[in-house]
Image (cartoon, one colour):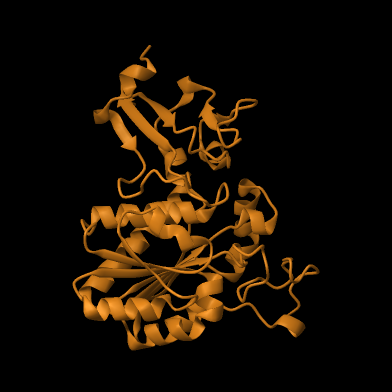
Length: 75
Length: 254
């Protein structure tokens, strides 16, 4: 099986912290910031376990605000 | 070990916000289904290469500002009258792809007559119907689609069918009409459901350009603010309570 490695970029200013991406992530890569907030006061999403990401894009697809960009490479 | 900088390159891009969706901050509440449906509309229009030929009709309701978020041409209709406006636009410019984007208060309450008659005339338009069983914009009042026993600000003890009547399955009603060619019910809570919904939306747009008749795509959606839940809880509540009453799938496909 080819190994894949992904990474996501979150537009933190656009993020509203709805947590749907965290719920959709199959590898528990994403989490909401515990203390940090963006300009609007939302706890934005970030990669808590960046090594776990497989670039499946489930987070990007469910994001209602289109904040997430997903990249993937085959190793 | 490969670093993030090495992965973030244009050739490795898997998913990003559709180009037609601009950078305006959306006014929707966190986790609102509207955002996902907006993205799907933008993606489908982009994939069909109809960016310059699409005209949307925005409703009155939460989606009233849809014209701020997707870079296509828009018309704003009076409350409930989007299918009537879309009829005029499509008849005057038959080469354009015309769709309406309406919520349940707009489509199933004040605009019931316009919706049913546009579908019955078989206008070559697409009607996108967001059904979240509540009036989201005005503060979570009871809508015609509110489920039996569901609590809203105007029926705080739950909808009583003796007093308020039964929830309206408007898509089933429209599926009976000869003018409607495609009536389907979809949802956008998980990524497989979103992919399926996108396919349905694409078919609806293709039907309208092929002149087959009216296509209606209903999205069973959430309203976390109106339902007083978190977005994650709302999705769960929708799966448990909305889906048994509003089952997903094609109601009509001709």
